[in-house]
Image (cartoon, rainbow, N blue to C red):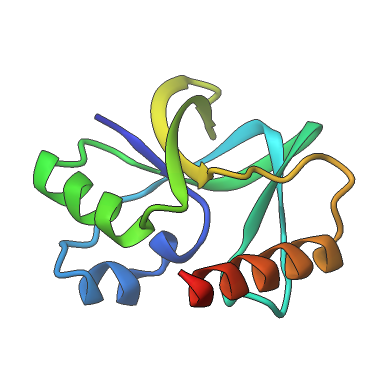
Length: 127
């Protein structure tokens, strides 16, 4: 299995923190998404954007054990999507990619995202 990563999982120190071996990443892009940043959370958020190009990397040959660790790290607010990632040579790779369950729609600003995450945090406190 291959995993496309675009945020904190591209940082070797995070992978090591999770107790995993840092992979030899393959730089790649996925179309149809773009990243936004917000002060509400310390990691990038995705929005669907048919003109967007998401830069990240392919984690090739991720083991079942490493995948399970990543799945746990991503938590309940993320789901797996299958995407086609394109490497520098133009080759296509069928990859898993984690996205928020409430994937942001094109046109969302960092302020929209911040408001969403604040509301989600308040809802979690009530539960």
